[in-house]
Length: 481
Image 1: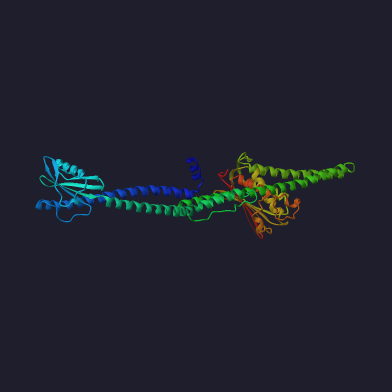
Image 2: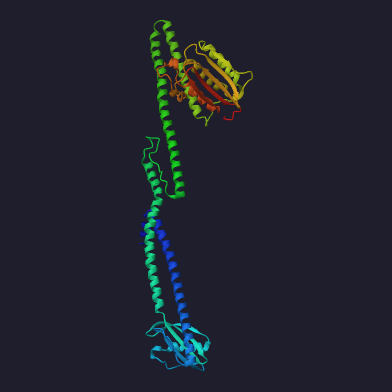
């Protein structure tokens, strides 16, 4: 039975359990308050009755002393007995009225004897045969004379009984109201918790692989500071989960695009290699000129595929830089490195005039010269590939606030605003129709950004009609490395 009650209690909702607990606590409080009030009322009424007996006996004692008899007002159902005491033995005087004494006066005689022996007022509660509970008081009227008065306790018992009845009814009604309204109040106060539980169930039933955003939130502002704090923490947790899922979804989408683009980019040179291999096999039986031409094309496609694989490998190593960094750092002059990149650009792109501004002082910093040179080459090549012949290009090296800056600017048509945020994405091309021979694989800027970040720096783009600038910032002290 007890086990069943425990299981039923555990199966109740939190609001009901709290309401029952509050009701049990209120019941204990009501019991303590009711018992204390009842005892206080009984003691108070008893004290009042004792005082009433005392006052009545004072008047009656004067009457006995003056006239030898009881005169004056007598209370209903009260008893009075006068004893003459000689040698400690009380003897009952004949009452003026037979109704003044009960049929059984033994208790009166015992109280009178006790008063004579103690020589002080005596108060006792006795059960008179056939009458009920009475309060007896004995006092000395004069030497040798003792007055014993008795007052019924029925009124006190009735009053206390009515008080207990009123208390029980009031407490039961109050307890029922407390449980009912308390449960309603608690349910309303705990509603935010129920909403959070509903939200959590919604999350568990939501397919997180389809969307990076969770479909449910809890925005109820009720419940007080504690529930509000929990609500804030709960929604903050959901926002973090949202962000994590968004990052994961974006990473998955980028990975899919990366794999698809990489497969597509690798497929083209592989098909070319296969085609030229077939042509080479066919042409080998004819003229040496045909064989040499196809062999050259084979080498070109293989080299192009090798460059693409090198870029992919570099990006993969940079992505895993927390495991093994691909950089070989050393102290080197950035100005000298920029000069070498400028010389190579002039030799390979004579149709794009290049202006170099590096200042008169060297800019030494800790970096990987080979990889920084790769960044500069990629940016310069990007300026030449995506602008028409004759477009001016400038290369500037400076130091600003403890940071080495390299700015490469071209005066071409600029990059559309919609494409500026994605030019650093892998395999992204501004001109989708551009041939791969002219436009490259779309990895140059992605590699440049990854290498700059690996050095602890940043690369920014500002572009408009007539001016496109890539700004590379590298820390002089190597703080970001």
